[in-house]
Image (cartoon, rainbow, N blue to C red):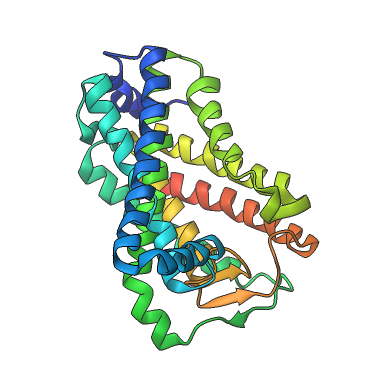
Length: 293
């Protein structure tokens, strides 16, 4: 595929593309991510004391309640800030260069979000045999919705800034092969979804689905020269999975509906394949839309 806009996107990273800078940058991101989590727990400790902190830690581990789920999403603030500090401290380039041209970021984010909303809405019409149950009263769900949307916006933005911004840019500045700047970040992104304690025998299906998304998001970033389309793609996907219909279990605390199935259930495998198919179709639609807008 031709990625003319990608050259512009990668250009700021070319001045300092050394591998040691990338490795040190990732360690810095990890440290700041961990520090952000420590700060959140510190605030909880000051406000709630030792017993309250233990209760909130349990809430966050289970993430089956709205406040606990919001706190989990808040932990991604360090992941968002980390690459911003890394590019300034180690690569001597601007924070804005992680995103691409901001008007394009905003425009493509909105386009991708709207396309995803339409595609996922239509996918719900496909018979899947999935039974869903109300998980939260509508009035309460609406009261949490602004903060929930902000939390998903932060979580998906942090991952896009790190994987499609910092990592893809810096690797593309150092290596010409898409195997390094497109496939490698997607594999790392997929590996971070390896949670056999949660997904059981479905773990490799989940990892494959995450890897597919990572590849498609990398393609959108390369095609458009910004993280806007990939971010909108990611944001809409996670809004559906976290805020609309969630599997019963971790990260279900903000969902309007839940499916009474665990992520380790064999019954969800057809749904994983359906989701992968929907992801591919949505990627095609987004790609067509952003080339015309």
